[in-house]
Length: 400
Image (cartoon, rainbow, N blue to C red; front, top):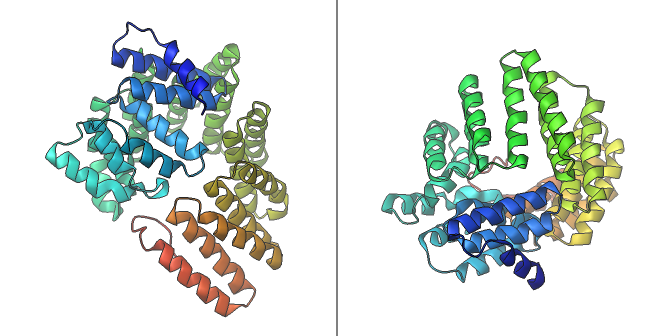
């Protein structure tokens, strides 16, 4: 992120606007850059929106999420950055949130619950708890409270659109399909919603309509969304359409080759526009699907590409995932020496992944490679390292 880009972002807003108005304007400009698949500039604008109004949670959430995805040692940078921000209630809340690793956000729950209890942090603790409460263990204790938290969070931060989609998904999972549809319609109808958000909301509405058995209405809505995306013409809008389509196709029992083709379209579109995170995610998902379907050899070119991307940006979390996933594919192919080499690379990269979860995953995969090779002493050592890494992950689904 360059100083020139940040200065440009700060000059875009109308000088006479209030802080909240300015923050919302910059936030929408960031979404405009997303629609162009210019996500690096959108990150600059999310930062500018955050600094325009430090109480505006949507800007914080997007900025934190994109920074941890796109920056080497992003969590450490964020912790240092937030330590220097003015000591407002929202900033204090987000400092507590950032004490936890990205893949272990529930570790921040106790601090957020305490802030909520004492009234410190304003609405921020409730909003953030609503995003992580479903990951708390034991699940049955917390799942019943999730809807109530999401309702309160939406009242406090209706501009955070992920809350709407999560709320609808929880309603739908409990069989309340029509209520879930209503929630998505309400979100899409907001005057503050952006084309990127409305596309996602309407695609998810179509999926819900299909789930309640109205195939004609579902396909009519999909067609309307597709045509709107085509008229819009921006590459990020097309990517979001494909991304949502990839989620909906399994509902209609689409053939595997169609699902694969959608992922390849996403990857190629992202690559053409230099959007490496989206290309990486698309190829990673495709490689895993192929491996899980019993086609690890076909998956290898996809793994090779995501390793090339991960090594080029030098971000530990992507390197760790890419290497240990290719390790699993090579292990299934009986190429145990190559698998061991990849797993050891994953272990090394996991030290820069800012996440005990990825350290545990790397050792978990390595111990299976050693076990399959009959190298039981080394498997036991890897098992011990896995157990050490997983100790702080009390809310993680990771198991031996």
